[in-house]
Length: 342
Image (tube, rainbow, N blue to C red; front, side, top):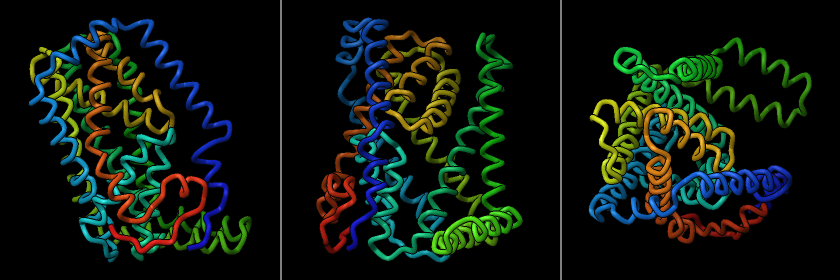
């Protein structure tokens, strides 16, 4: 296999952006040490019944399968061929990579690379991942809007106006993104610009991506079904946080707790696009405190989610070894030749 371009290595592993990520993480950790009752945090975590942690781990593992199935559904909709096992394996491998690399987008690049080894066209991979993310974003935000309606009707929340602005902007961006991705005139305009200003090879590549995205226009039912699957995947995430929240002793009534989790997940998804360790976690803690959860419990909840999700992603290490992928070599743009086994 040919060596990958060095630009990927710089993007993933170093450079100014990488150092900024580590600095942000250090600032977040320092702020938590100063502001949070560490003894209370430790006691809250150690008091959790092991069976509750095990249940959360099972739900987190189920999430890998649901996400793999949801992504595969989009690939099959346009005639791509990939087994459920390959899709889930790719998600496991990208999931563990996101725990090791400070840039979440790197996990999507790795997922694309893994399934590319089994012959799936690059344009199908990129278009399916792009639509998957937009649809998941839309599903998450719509659930949060429903949660905000509940808060508006039954709860006097000081931060309500700010949350409404964030959520309405999020819904608007998700809808606009989905429309643009499937809008033929927008693709035609972009194609003319690429032919005029970009190298011919890159322009042809973008044209392939454009055709792959526009192919989904012929499958509106598949897109709607994928939105329903995205709601299902959100339900799995909500169930995981519900178990962890109850294990930590959060005693909110069920509906307010579910609303709190939905809003937290949406804010977390938005902040994840800033691509840095610590930002989403810190923002989620702030979100929880605005909704009435004390700082120590909020930090414990986010910390436990990180640990449980990381443990659930550990099979990705075995799958990386089995597929012959050396993460360090891949990050440097070099790769061992191997027969892929997903």
